[in-house]
Length: 140
Image (cartoon, rainbow, N blue to C red; front, side, top):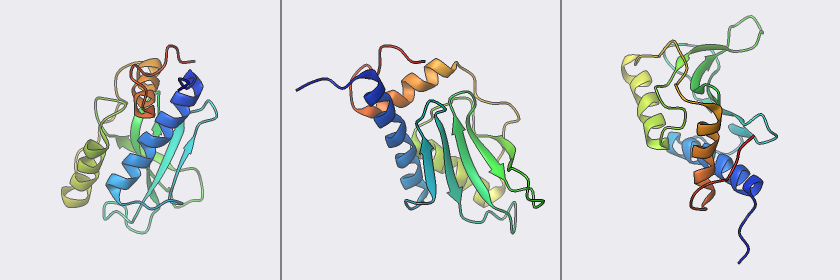
């Protein structure tokens, strides 16, 4: 069996990670997207959140900032980041669900700064979801 290339592992791992987060949140296909074209960005649409009634809400992910809560402004402009999930850029999907559960029940607490770590560390962590021990040798 041929070992997948680093790019294949990266794409598969990234997509699986975002898919697992969406599944943990009960978000169906078509309501989430993962850009694996080098930007490594993800969008997971969230059903209405009482904190922001009548506004579109989503979780967005980048390797530079980790997960952030994005909220529609109401003026037709791009969504704004209301805050960040926590101190790690690639938390387990269950931790993302717990974060959203807290936001739904008591407003939770949003961090005002992105998670610590490097872009490369975040990309290695999502590559690990690609199913090959050790992830990838190098990330760009």
